[in-house]
Picture 1 (tube, rainbow, N blue to C red):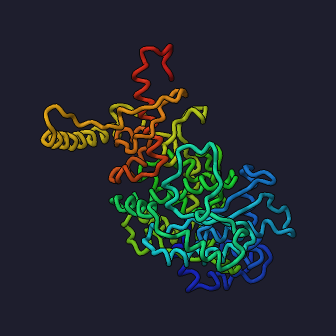
Picture 2 (cartoon, rainbow, N blue to C red; picture 1 turned 30 degrees about the horizontal axis):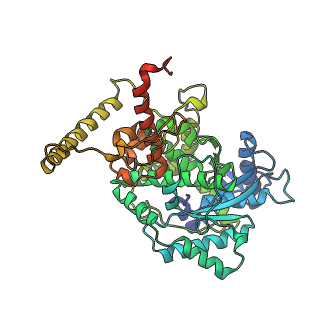
Picture 3 (cartoon, one colour; picture 1 turned 180 degrees about the vertical axis):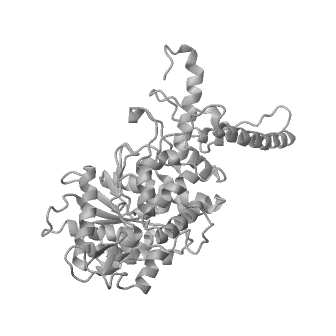
Length: 483
């Protein structure tokens, strides 16, 4: 969820004084040890005051957290999330002026399946993460990424976490029992292999990174619902969000930028994702961790050891970091420009149709002469040629009186609530899937095996398709046309 960039690593190795050895602190006049932003020199104590104030001000300006709210902190062990947990711990200290008033807990999403780690390696990583989280004194939980594949489309009645998937630190005070639980968490399951197959079906690194990000966010929201939390804080820095703005534009996700980089991401109605580290650059976060001995754990990701041109995300990240080196206001300029972006939509948020994968507003309702329509037409022609080939092969292997039909389409169960609830449809067509996905998600899953997609995507697409079919059957009897 957060990793330090190469600029931050070289900064620690080559410049232990952070380039401020000959400067005086702009606040108290003592010898400066760090230069923040562009040319603001601070001593150690003044830098801490400056850093904590900006963190608290981010919460104060948004006014989305009330006294006693429960906030789930997404902890990956990286630099950004470690700094976020450290700042929250400082803000909850009794001696702190105007202390934070919410109740925090930590959650770690194990993503070892993404990088092909063995179950022993995943268990070792989880043990190291649990040791770091245990030192905070906060409640903490661990979940594996493959759990996201079985999240239901509706979460009207959240259940408690199952044993072995997520657990509370206080429930396992014995170290030996805890190690056994961590090993059991990372055992090979059918979902693990399914997740590997799904990632393998993606043809590009960009699609894999988008898929992992969507699975992670959906699992965080799902676990927050199960545990009774309505807010989830993630450690996205301003540097990462700035590169994400350019990456989203390049991937056709421009409509999701306003919510993807906002402090409060309210795409999910009952759970809000918060980004309290958005005001800091990665360089500032690395300096804070080095000065105040904040523990972190590096973990490999899909982009580790990949080239600059391996994916759109790595390319834009390299572009932003190189510009930031020579032009220190690059991140701030891109970030503030992204804040001004907005999308035209309905005044009623509940009336907006949302993508079943990323929960952004659907941006596929365009005119017939648009570029998206031309792309759809090309895909339709290519798929039609492939389907005609399959039909010819089907006719060659079947008698004349037999037809190639899907037996599941003949079964339906009316449940009296206005829609069909048949569970016989286990697969979904590309055409019906495109009706529930935004353009960016359509590109992400274009080359994937649709039968391996998470349950919530397949169920939502199947429901839309059934309701559309039912509407076509009864449209002659409707009193008025829905808007």
